[in-house]
Length: 201
Length: 219
Image (cartoon, rainbow over all chains, first blue to last red; front, top):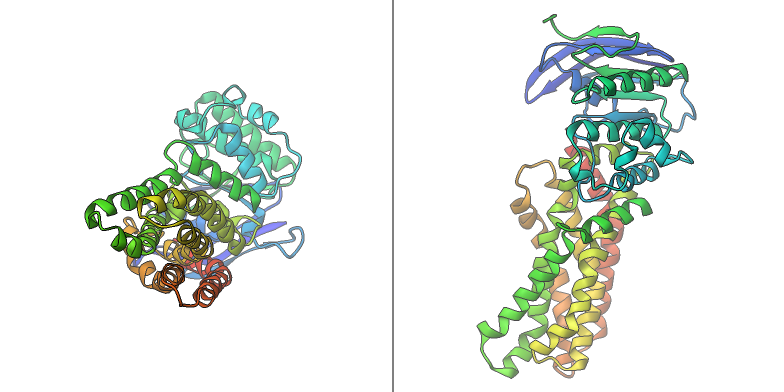
């Protein structure tokens, strides 16, 4: 399968963030989106996720599973905001997203352990540190299968071990034939082509 | 869909959830009213249904504010929009959870509050019945306003301005049905059926309109 965008333009608050942007990613490939602050990395990911309307251009996913599904329905989006409820426990948060995202069968405990927060399963999410919240968000990527991962600064707030973990999860996803687009400032820890938005810093 | 209902109910009943705030506000308004109006039992009896309905309307407005903003602020709304479940169904699920968490407790509290307002058993039952039929309409029309106001920083005021005019018919027919029981000789069935019809219209229009508003508001 292949994800491609052409002639994309983004306007935020009357100001043009980027225009004429094109890219292509195919199965088993990762694309690192880089650029200075405010270049529009997050906006690009939100456009692909269908959460923002592009001012021009279009994004399409070719050769996916059942043609009924839209692009957004085949994507995982990991944004700045972690979509966790402080009053619910770690397990409750994750099991809600598994049911909501239509995941089947994946064992919550296993996914939590894989992300290194198995010990906090019964704790309300409000008590987690920023890094632990990030790990819990990553566990969401595992409980439901989606071919396309859109990751916004996936390694922020993670410690060295967490960054290695993120890299391992991403390379496993690529090995299954998945696609990854990640906005990042640091190294992702996996082989990835680079998409530069705006001038190099 | 049930996953969303379950989560919202859990959140409403945990510490800091909205369910108890609504009931507490309802209690406060209704308990204070006899002190403000004075010890005129006949007057209280005549005003009783209207006071209960006003309390229910205002307290539902109080909790509607957080219906979508809480999910918008922490990013859950993005994922709900992206999920494979249609947004209309998700809106319906949120409305159902809101009604169960903040509408039903009002109905349960009504008999106790009826005593304070000198309502007899029959009138109290009538108020509870009209609330049962009318509060879904309040939640469903309020949801449209909540969805429109979601992207604004302080949408609470806008919500009230948008929703209150839409709630006026519910209020009118709710109180009319109750008064029909208190004062003899007026038909009870007609306003009650209109109240039910308002809820049914809300059930059809509310989720669709709220989903459309949410899609527009994405940014």
